[in-house]
Amino acid sequence: MAKAAKSFEESVARLEEIVRMLENGTATLDESLKLYEEGIALVRACNKQLDNAENKIRILTQTPSGDIEEKDFDGGNE
Image (cartoon, rainbow, N blue to C red; front, side, top):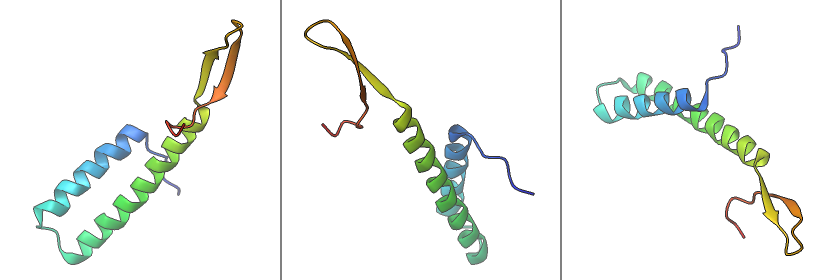
């Protein structure tokens, strides 16, 4: 059965937990590799969620004539 998708906040919290566990150094090599793989999957999922959120963001600006114009958010890459 497929796992339910975690929220962004849940994913970040789990990533923080994984980092603490890896920094602690008490995990075996096999456990560390599994944690690392889980962390990579969570980072990818978080990046995808952030990309999706960024694609939804639109900026409303007022033109000199007073009209409202809608533009795509470019993430500060202007």
